[in-house]
Length: 480
Image 1 (cartoon, rainbow, N blue to C red):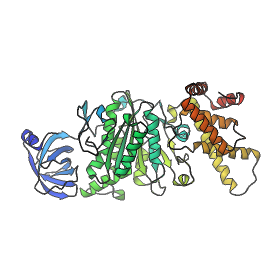
Image 2: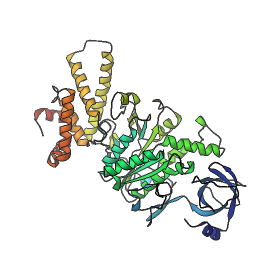
Image 3: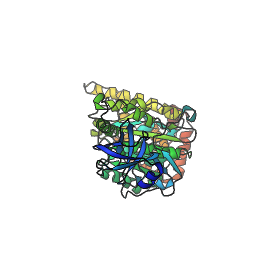
């Protein structure tokens, strides 16, 4: 940005701070100022106009500096824009485009400059979701699969493994050439450092950008975090690339927006949120999708409280997205990792992007797990069970053991299909759960290290469109 004096000489309007209410300031003396315009204070701080009336411009400030009544203010005649280039890779920035830790500008040679609250692309620019999006988590890839361009809500209580799942997804997607943008909204600095460290240790940072604000940052800056992340995603999407955007988390974002609007004396609605809280999230998530050139897959995160997913913000964002993954505290406490409740999770468009065999497996596994749950409930009554029911329970125990996936392991889709097919075919019927875990680990280790073995499995899986045909073939051969 230019200096205070440059803007003053160029535009010729000067205002004065007349009233201060925490991060909201009321400025008089800028007759032609516009809503959303950036203004500059003589002390160097930056703010944005929220609204304008006949007497004052209502401004939110983007720093924690102390502003005094009487401070001079100038217009910039500019909207909130972000300078963009490949220099953003491997960096952690704030929504203004500065390094989060040093506060120095990151983009020295900008290739583009974009308004961060742009209008979502129209229907003529969009395509139907037709490509699979792998997370590397078998339970999700087989039962609740996603597609490129999908908006899938990640919801659950604190400490149920949501962030670990998101980092696993980043690891899988970076290795497939996807650009990943992590929007960390009002996080503790320690949490941001931990995400940075994970990406660096696993050599993922070269394709990643972190847009972050800490919980001690000004509410105006925190509010802008997801919009800045989405703007960066649109820049790379327009280059024809596939982008993953994680917004962690929008419930905190809504809380800070509520703080801003209450300070600005907006009329409160349900749970004291303003009436346009639905709009501010829907206009953000609508910018994701599958486009003619490239895609933006969005994983917004929302925190549930005591397993309640029917709260105001939770249901708002559920209605905007193409499904949700529910991380269940009870499953987490039982040792399930990831603790995704497949019965309460939904993917509305993910199945249409999968191959025919994945759709078939998803249907069969879902039906099987429902049946398994019913049988396990019957066992509580002490009823006698037939050999067929015993076999179903034993198979269910082994499948659930396979779905318990350590956070450091990402399982490719072909390997997941192959292992589930072996379990279903009865080849490991005589093995106990511990031996099954050992066999699974052997297959996965060999799949990763032996290129010829990996190609054989992928070619073998690609031959089949129906799961039953795959099972029959496996029952007639000894090994691949």
